[in-house]
Image (cartoon, rainbow, N blue to C red; front, side, top):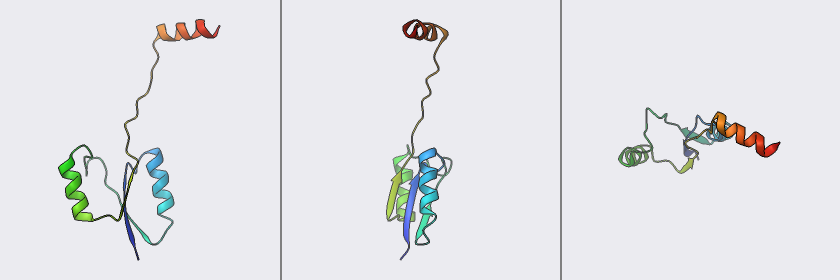
Length: 83
């Protein structure tokens, strides 16, 4: 019996690892949608997608990544603390 699995965030680091592992199982049918195909912030769009594709399981690996870029002032403070 084939299990239909939707992986949100399948292009990210965690999501792509999940997809790699699941794709090794011949009994798994992966449901993947890019950001342009499905806006996860749009509840109505997500509900319509789920009703249309009817996944058996959903893996939520979608996330927003924030990168801390220290300023020169912050670096000086860090160097003073370390020194």
